[in-house]
Image (cartoon, one colour):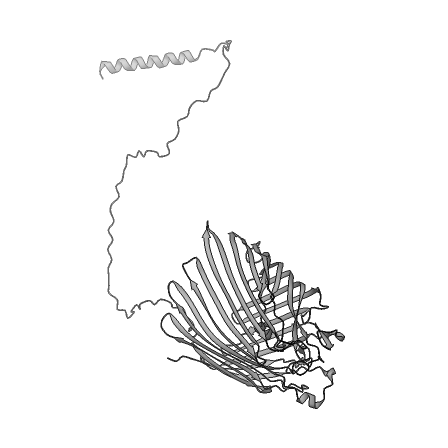
Length: 578
């Protein structure tokens, strides 16, 4: 052992011995004085790092792993097939034929025939032929005079269209035969008197017309028709009716101007009962109708006025008329509710041809004059109750000056040699009539196979000089339905109702005081019609039509009883010449 180690050990032993001795002394009591109160403070803490640093003395290195696949070939008979796109099944489009012919026969020896042909001259031009015939040999129960009728019309047309314009011309003719068979039962005619009456009346009509439409021009379209009408009593009527339309767009607003020209020349050879000569009528009416169409979201407003000048050449009388033509509609609930209103007026030229189409039993010495339709004010609402049900409600008030009314001619005139002066014909009376009407319509379009429409309109008339609004009904209603039963079968029905009308029974000359004139009521009537058809193929089909299926012996005009139950069957064939 060396000296340094001995000395260190001695020093350490002395140090430990002194400490022990010192710890054995007793602790005395002392007073502690607090100079400053204790005020603890929060010191800053060291924030732990979000991404601590790894300090590892042992860092093992990952060894790469290598994989190997032991591939063994396997025999397989699976062969993948190519995918196909799914196709939509489409129905075959219906073939449209350019020509058709229809022929049918029924009781009362009724014949119905129609023929139409559309010949393509070139890609833009077409030539059309239309022929229609409807006739009956009569045979109405209880009628003592001949009551057959014929109605035949032929029309030839030529149509052309190109990029800038389209035009059409047409010529045609019409022949109608009717009989004044409505004798008054109270006339008490003898068999010889009845046998001497020839009630036959023939109407002839030929016409020519044309129309033109420009696609990119302020001159929008124009059309004109000239018609000559005659009858078995040497009546001659020439009527020219022409209209033209101009359209301008100014500040995104459409301004439309319509121009009218209506010229009528009429001559009756027949005397008006005791008058010494026939009657001549010549009217020339010219009009212009500017209007402004305003479209604002759901609001449509049409503001216009119509100005007419009318010349009665035979009486050297002329008049100037101004009519309002204002209408508006507003969609309050989209397609479900649209309110509309308007007030419109017009000058309507009456013609002998139009009277015959309304009442073929009019006498060939009827006074002709225009009707001053002062205004037609209406308000209504239309829309949809659902996606398949639509409605239209309208109320209107119409004021017409010189409105035409059909009234039966009196029996027993001074000159009773004519076959239409036995109370079996009608003349035209003119009066100022105000009409209040309420109209309602409901249409049901369930699907493409079933459609139904119902409408009704009630009227209330007020006259000025005539005691009644002759032969105008107080109510009209109709129901129309079409049903595609299957691909081959189809059917439809039409029901219409006409309310009561009033007419006058009188005896004596109309220029003198009638003796015991009597207002009579024509009963209301209901007429039920239906049809049923079967399509053998796209070209050939057969049909059956029934008229007046309720077999009501009603009268459309006083003493003119209609045919009873009528059934007509026929076929329709569609074809192409190529």
